[in-house]
Image (tube, rainbow, N blue to C red; front, side):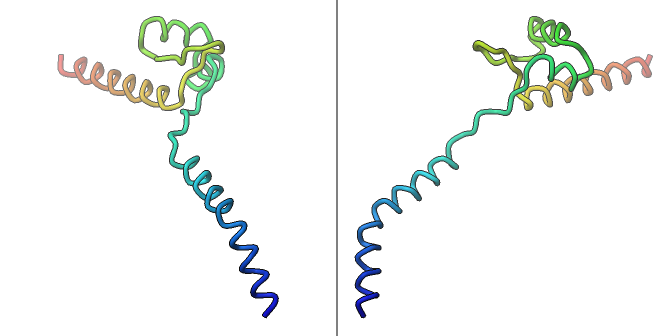
Length: 99
């Protein structure tokens, strides 16, 4: 009997802190996560080009880089660029075949 009362008192005392902790964990999961980014050199290796090649693509507006002290490119942006470039290559080869 004494143990049950002791456990009830502990639960009553800890309940607000537990609720706050649960809300914090749920809140952290629901926040939008910043996109995974890579630096220009890593992006260049992923696309088979160099740091300068990535800078050129960013200057042309074909890739969108993050602003800040250390420039980086989101992985999603690289995936979109690859998809766009493969579609453009396929369309160009299709138009060449039609001639």
